[in-house]
Image (cartoon, rainbow, N blue to C red; front, side):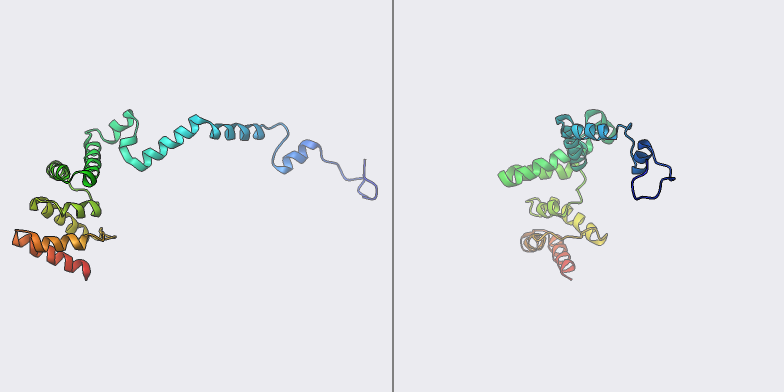
Amino acid sequence: MPRRGDGDGDRPRKSWSEIDKARGKSRHTSSDRTDRQQERLEKSQAYRQYKSNLDKFFEGGATAAPDGLKALLDPSGEKSARAKAIEAIQKASAEDRKKWSELVKAFVEEHELPPDPYLLTEFLGHPKERVAEKAMGKLEAMHEAGELKKVPPSLDQQLRSLELTADDDDLRERAKAFRERLRG
C-alpha cells in the first residue's frame, strides 16, 4: 500500500530480504553470531596464551620455539647453545668479572663472534689480548662492510684503553688506526 502523498503507487515494493541484501547482510546469515564467537575467542585465556607464545617465538628466536620446531630450525643446537652462552656472559658481566672473563674466553674458542657491536665492544676489555684482537677484527670487518650503523658510545674508550695498555705493538696500532677511522 502506498504512502499518502508519495504518488508512487505503481512502484513495486521491496521485500525485507531484498532490503537486507542491499544493506550487505541478510537476516538469515550468522555474521553477528560469528562476530560474537570471534570476540569471545579473543578474550579467552587460551587465545591470549597462544598469542603470547607467538610473540615470544618471533622475538626470542629458536629458544622459545616448541621442541618439534626447534629441531627444524636449529638441528645441531648450535644457535641455542650460542644464545645461552651470550646470556650467561651478559649476566656475569654485571656480577662477577672473573667468571665473565672465563665465559668470554670459552665463547670465543667455541663459537663464531656475533655481529653485535655492543657485545664486541665489551669483549675489547678482556684481559687476554687474543680475545680483544678477535673482537676488534670482527668490529673492523663490520665497519668495512657498512654493517656498523650505530657505534656504541663506549667503543672509543675501549679502543683508547687498548692503545694505552696493550702489550702487543700491532694491537695498539690497530686500535689507534681503527679509532681514527671511526672518527673520520
